[in-house]
Image (cartoon, rainbow over all chains, first blue to last red; front, side, top):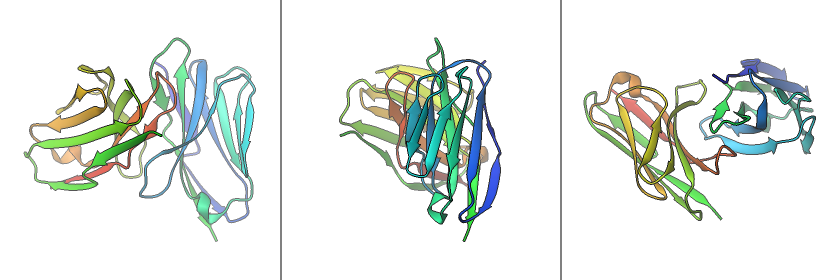
Length: 111
Length: 111
């Protein structure tokens, strides 16, 4: 079945450093979503990418969907302590119904 | 606007006791509804999803069950809780195969 792999599992950065998490699917995706879960909180939707090669930005966050629609990345520029949490990608395969979540990347930011 | 409610926020139950967690959605009709479980520091495990009243799909065989008695109500139940049922239970709603919006979650501790 469809699998969504996410790396790294954990990332420790110094405040001000950049951060990137990568998401790879075993099958072609119709779309991909990114969520952020703060410690002790619930996942919150950040963005959805649909088009091949699509790039979207939200302030210091840059989201990219691969040309083959099988991978995606989230890049944070100049991390802040407010960026701490776990970032999940989630994708739906073409012709599929279910959205499959990656295992998440937990970001730690040291001030 | 749409809102999703879950209760209780926290629950401590003895092994062997029953469980009933409720999730309701406001501001939308005929949503897809989902139950997830998240172990501490881990990813999201899809337990059940529903595309309509009385329609439940189970993803993982276990001692939990789900019901959807009304369009915007989703209930997670167990007749006898196990220690391994402890975790963070998240309800989510969303359109078909697309973005999911999560409730605040219920933290269940089985002792």
